[in-house]
Image (cartoon, rainbow, N blue to C red; front, side):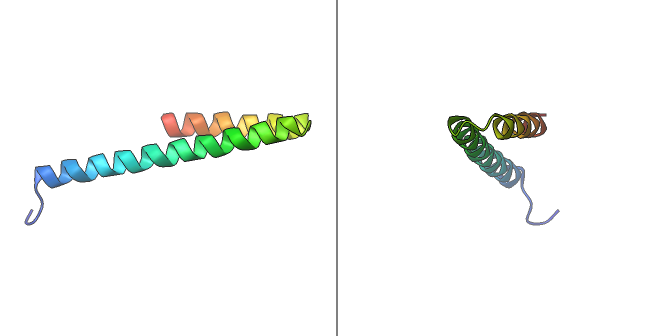
Length: 63
């Protein structure tokens, strides 16, 4: 394994974890904002649909 060191692997893993974490947070923020907008508009069916997708994405990302 030339050119591959444990330190480099650790740094890359940390970078990937930070990137996925920030992506996850921005996705959750977007979902919650859309849900709030749908609920404030009074569209209950749309709000429950967004809530379902929110929880589905939440479980998929955190498993």
